[in-house]
Length: 127
Image (tube, rainbow, N blue to C red; front, side, top):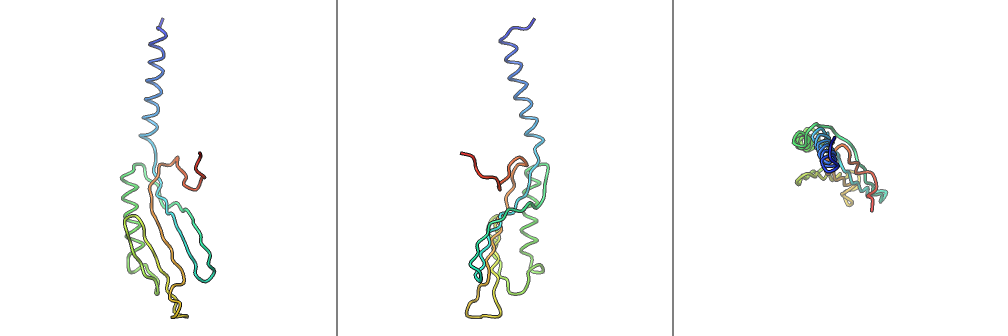
């Protein structure tokens, strides 16, 4: 027969082991937090998009760097778009050809972030 003190120690150890195992198997999601401002309509929008999944955080972070390289590559840019990368964010400024006095038509900022698969940034934060 097992003593109550040892039994609770065994249960606590089992819970900790299960939590560590769950964390080790956690997948990571690369998210794109897009902020958009359209000057013609004065509409602001904020959207979250999933980009990719990875088994480990370093793999997700490598995919993040690939995504920034892809978005900022000169061959992928449409005409009339200026781009600036800073850290994990990329800003695109869409210029208008039709109204030179009003040069900016739209600004988009893409912020890339790797989060565990059990975290959804679209959900409201709990207090």
